[in-house]
Length: 425
Image 1: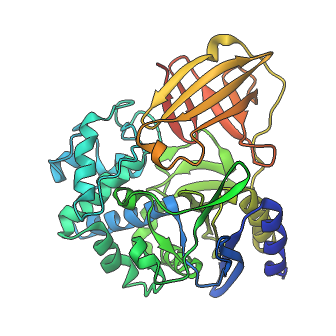
Image 2: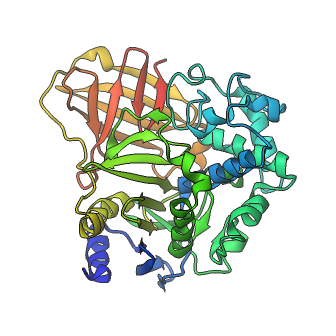
Image 3: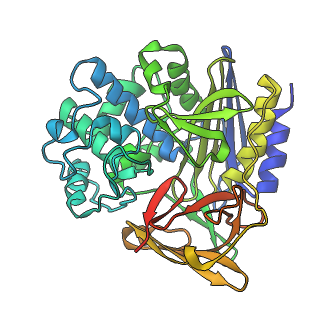
């Protein structure tokens, strides 16, 4: 068995990640390995029970509560949302399932801070009256944070309490999770990680997103608690339907091939892996489950460089237990480049400009609207390089030479990257 502490230390140092916790559960045995510091400004050491923001890994928690409500016969997944939540100013064709599967068509990256009060989700949902519908419900996939806030509000209405309270009553308490919270005043009672970004090379310590994004991304937990939540999905047949493919995912990054009921389904060397990733303001988290091997791995980090650490570490962990590693990232190739991709693409919180740069193309990403309040880098330019299939529509970008390549698809009507549809304007 490898020395996971030594490997985590080596790989995290190379990836410039200040603090991380690796969690492994395999057939009943749990290993928790901490590394580094939670906060470079204070030097507080990372421990096995330290709390990290798990970002969008919160979405399976919200989805789990929706599945519980369906089992209680209080909703059906194919119910129109407005039947259950008349206040929601959204397309009446959108169902609960559309929200779970990111196929609602709602422009999803709405990061409006609607305050710290218990009515923050209700106020957020009301704002969707001014948000664009990108496509007809059920006709495409586009990652949608806003849809999970709507699901959180639906839970509040059916349960008669806040989403945070339902999370505690339905999951945190029954699972005995002693290190899982949602609010900053709860997190400060524990050893809690702070995110780390940089300005002009100087480390800057950051915190979290608005409370209004809670159901989409504000669970804060220890590695042990996250493993326990994942283990419930491994052993409890009540949630088996969440693991069944619902929507194919065309991007294929990281082996992601299908979406279940919120769970992502990956193909790693022919093995079926479940999981989800999450990011907040310079905290990144990763969760992978191999049901057949009864293997769960999670990695929590306090850096935007978490992916640079996760991919080689996941390869080592999964190779050790099941003989497969993290799939290779897409790679650039020689292919056609012309001006038909050049143009502006825009959706809530982001503007994308494809521009000509000498003999090639570049993608300029600009944060807009409410996202500017916490954007780690409001403007960033990426080299846009052709990749397979060499048809003039498929490209890859990467944040820096040390980061993995990410696919970009451009059509006459939209640009698709990071799982999101952005219309041409």
